[in-house]
Amino acid sequence: MARELGYVSPLLSNLAVDHSKKVREGLVAPLLFPRITVGKPSGKYAVYSAENAYKVPDVTMAGERSRAAEFATSGKMKDYATSRYGLKSFIDKADLEFMDGPFKLWERQKTETLVGKLELAQEKRVADTVLNLAGRSTALSGTGITKDKKWGNASASAGGDPDGAIREAIGKLFYRPNFMLLSEAVFDVLEFHPRLLEKLGEANMIKKVDEATLAKLFRIDRVIIAKGRADFGKRTTDGALSVSSIWGNSVVLAHVSDVWDEPCAGKTLTVKYQEADGQGYVVRTWSEEDGGILGGEYVQVAHDVTELVVSENLIYTLKDVA
Image 1 (cartoon, rainbow, N blue to C red):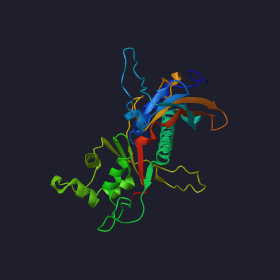
Image 2 (image 1 turned 60 degrees about the horizontal axis):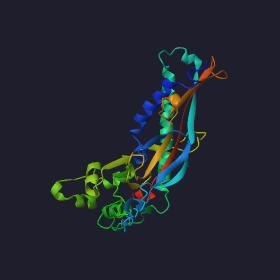
Image 3 (image 1 turned 90 degrees about the vertical axis):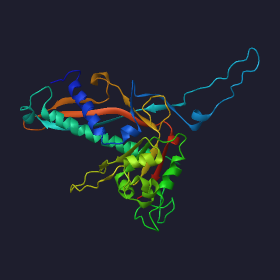
Image 4 (image 1 turned 180 degrees about the vertical axis):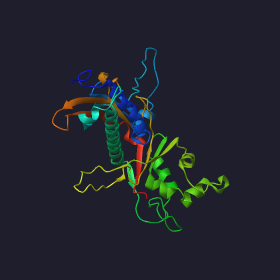
């Protein structure tokens, strides 16, 4: 039987939107590349450089009928095109027969599961974009106490210099970063790192590092520990998993903003579909006779998005630090 609005379910679509907000609370991509809704899947967006922020043209108006020089406040425009991402899942009608309510329990469970997978996939896309920006990262290696060395196994002769490495990375951005991302593996190394504790000072009686002390030490508004882990490989016949951190052994420094026309690290553009209450996620259901005892029903969750770098000079990554 056809669903409302040509198989699109507004109730389930709104459920998907609500659940996606809960899922994103444990992820980093929505903070690093905030979501902005757009009216169509292609168009233009502004990219920014240090010149946009700091270049001041000649302001002199010489002569009685002189004209002021023109200054363009916006960044250069680049084309964008969104991509569609979605997943579907089958529900046996024999199970649906026993579900009541505005949307059946299994429809809700399937929708929430698919939303979680789509959000993790987007986290991976943003991580891949940020970690692979050309010329915007430094990889640490080897042992020692200088800023180019890894931070693990801190001792008198090892453990690198996290303070020096992070401060040097901060200097690579033309605005001071207001956001720092650390993977769990990195935080495990820094939590009791003697050189950071020394920088924080004995007078503060600080015996371990946390998000608040890191924010204070580097004057950064928000420090986040990225906990996203998943297996993005193909399914194996034996069901074995290879789970890894989405953000690897990295520290990402960025200047972020959710204001559309401000210089920032990046944005996620999401196409607004009116059938789904304008929030991006679209959930469709349709009958499938070939399956189950009584046939079945498919639930599909999809969104139309793209993840864009607005200013690569407002992102810098320290890689392989742990």
